[in-house]
Length: 401
Image (cartoon, rainbow, N blue to C red):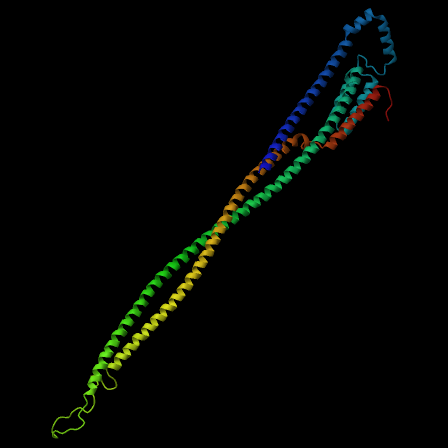
């Protein structure tokens, strides 16, 4: 983040400096162009003053030698000096040459010069052509420098825009990925919390059921033992009684008269239907209570073993889920921190990209969208310089191919 902030600050400073430099160059170019125009206008005025009646008339009156020289010059060079009634043949030839070159190249500058060549005095035309050649060559040098500067700035700006665009795309994808991971972790934590709650409820219910079942089994065992003790006591009493009653044997010999009632010939076994007696019945009941105690004890042991196994597995599962919850919470916090940092980096990178795009838009008017390509401008200017150089040769009386 610190590096990105530093890069942003450097890019912004570079943009401001470049914008100031562009404005300074533009102002300087306008100023120099204005000075050249003013210089040409001034020289034109000087020429008009020098060739006016005030100067030439005074020369004719007071400087006869110069007048004679002027007459000789006028006589010797009629082909290069226009008369009072129109341009000289040389100027007409020059105007036609420039008009034709203007038509071929489509140069407005050559068109204007051809018109001036036909209308202005010879000396003024020659001066104009020389000045335009110098001006065009200076413009060519300036544009070459400007083109080099534009190429360097556009290349550097494109590298910045491409790299920042890639970074924005990657950071945007990172933000989306982190948001998806955080959402998944939040869902996992919700699921784990629900599962832990269900485990706690299941363990609570199992504990309550186990306590209730244990209480019931313990009570059953207790009751069975008490019943067995009571039955053992009852059996002891009965056995003791029946043992005594067995001693009272039935009469083995009957001596009364035949009409006496029948007497017992077997020991007394109690009032139980045929096939059993009270002792047998109580022993069956005692066996039932013994069995009930054994079953209750066995059930208690089995249920306790199952309960302990369930509780062990449930606590183990709960511990694992709690550990997983802690891990996911830590991971979620880490990813939320990474998301915040990535969002900040994305914001700064987007600002850097916007700065680069804004600088490109500032470069476009002077470096990209100029209305005509650099190559076409160079070719047109070279054609204009070449045409003006040939025009200068015409003015100097030289033949051109």
